[in-house]
Image (cartoon, rainbow, N blue to C red; front, side):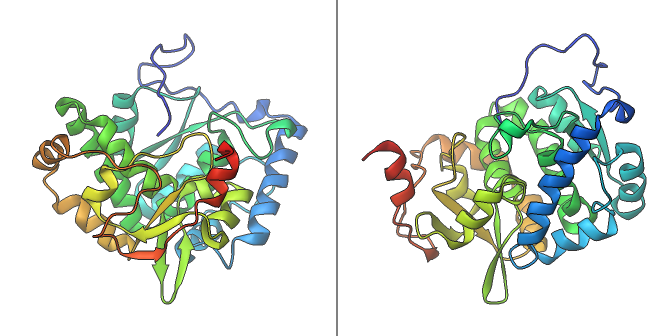
Length: 287
C-alpha cells in the first residue's frame, strides 16, 4: 500500500469515487494500454499463477483498449460479487478498507505516459486493472480481499494499519505462490511490471522464503525499487484460512514487543526457497 491521500478532491463523492468517463480516453491512451497488455501477456503464461491467466480470459481483458469499468464490473459481479470503481488516485486508508470490505476494488482511471512505461509512483489503470482484477474472479482470493478490508477497519481502530499494510504489500502486491515444483507470480505489483516479472522469479538477488504471517508483519518493504524479499504462499485457500482464523489484536500486541526485520534479513525460522545474494540492491546503493 502506498502513502494514502488525505484531502478529497472536489469532484469526488464522499466515498472518493468518480465516474470513469471512459469516452474521454484518447486513441493514445488506448494504445498505451494495448502496448502494456501485449508486453505482459507475451511473458506471463509461464510465470503467472494459472488463476490469474484464467481471470484475464473470463473477464475478457484481452479486448483492445482500456476496459470499461461498468462492463468489467458486470462480468465480475456475476462471478464473485465484486465490482471496480474509479477513484482520482490514492485514497485514505479507511475509505480503501471500506471499499474492499464491501467487495469494491478502487482503481485509478488515468494511464501512464510513454515516459513512464516502466515506472510510475502512483498506480495507474493498467496496474490496478490488469494487475489486480483478474484474481478477483477467483473465489478464494476474492474472499481474501474482502477479509483484508474488514481487517483493515479493525486495524484502524487499533492503530495497527502500518503492520497490516505489510500483509497487503507482501501478498496482494508482491506475492509468490508455489504450484507443484514451481514458483509463480500472483502479486499485482509484479504482474503489471515487465522488469519485476523477470526479477522476482529468475534473479538470484532477492530472498524467496515461505509465508509466515507474524514474520511477514515484522518485515519492512521497499517502495522505491524491486523487493529484496518475496514471501511464498502454498495456496489461496491457505492464505484465506490463515487470515480469517487469525485473531489479529493479540498479534499486534506481540509485534509491538518485537523488533522489526530489515528488507533483506533472514532469520533461523525461515523456510528458504532462495537465499538472495542481494547483488541488485547493493549495485543500486554502491555498497
